[in-house]
Length: 166
Length: 285
Image (cartoon, rainbow over all chains, first blue to last red; front, side, top):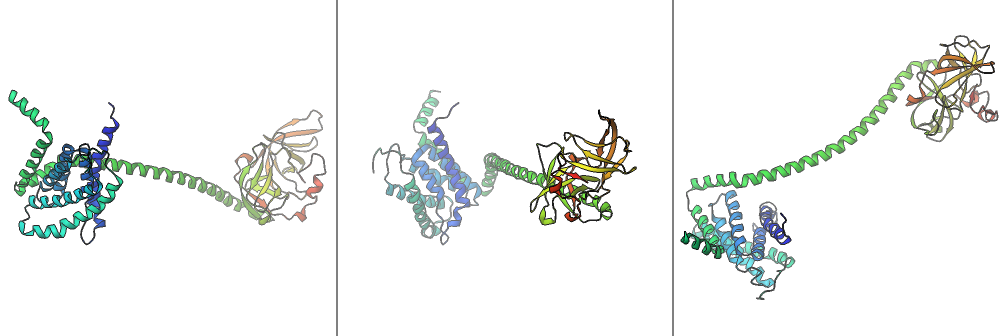
């Protein structure tokens, strides 16, 4: 049984996301500024969703979220729920169907990271009274930091198709 | 049945949405479960999915670590083998030194210890290089011996090395005496494979006699043990006898030697004078 080059690339791309998860848990905390960490995992995940589409992104998001849930002490299912939704939403902008320009991709990453934190907070049932504070003190700075990292990564990895230029 | 098939086709067409609904629904359902159920699920998920992955990763990491350890041990093994070889050489040298201490009082001159660093591959009997030279007081013509007996003489020196002509060298001739009868003979080697003594038919040299240096010429001091006489045979002219000699020191097994620091002024005939005599380039008288 031979594996085509495209399939090999897909497998490799799929392995990069869990790898980013490991890096996120081990290396990224070293780069925290005033307690705010970028989400390298979210960068890899959004890139994966844009490259591979909604279906792989939904499953990838679910399993990576489940791993995060298992190792975190919070509510089980919160990460997997948030990442499944983000994977589905980002996957709708699959590169084969839609071409996003560089600024839009970076903005999408920031919005994705912010929404992920929002969904996670709600799914974790941490309470509405802490929501605004959490979003302003944690989610927003983290999303901006993630956008900064994503801007570098996306510049190095431009989209492969120009189906429809937005 | 038809209904199931229709539902499957519908799910396949909208599989992205179906996946989203199933997975998001499952996530929400599990998040709404009590803490005990969540703990059980965590345990089950860790044991069934994550643990095998972790085990495989750990095994790979472990095997890589083993490989690195193996490489490191191989290198260390090579280094230890080299160290062992060096130590064995030093041990041999020290053993020879200890043996030599026993005969040192019988020598009238100081000695300097040396190790063989090479042998001439073209001359079977052997020209050797030892690791002492003129800086240690070694000069041409000095006797080279081991604790068991004479093995040769210095024929040239540099600052830190000297060339030794062994008894088994075909160009080497040494005047010897029978310790029993004090009758003289000439020790020589024909092809480097064996050592012989040549003596007059009137000389009283018999098998089993111990040979020692004569010392008349000054190159070798008198009385250094050389070897034991073996079978005697007549020469065709019947004016000389030849006997095989078993050297006390096997020239092939020499690793360390001592150079007898006997001043050149004590020699009766200088080396330059000796070299003018045809066929007697290195005769110890």
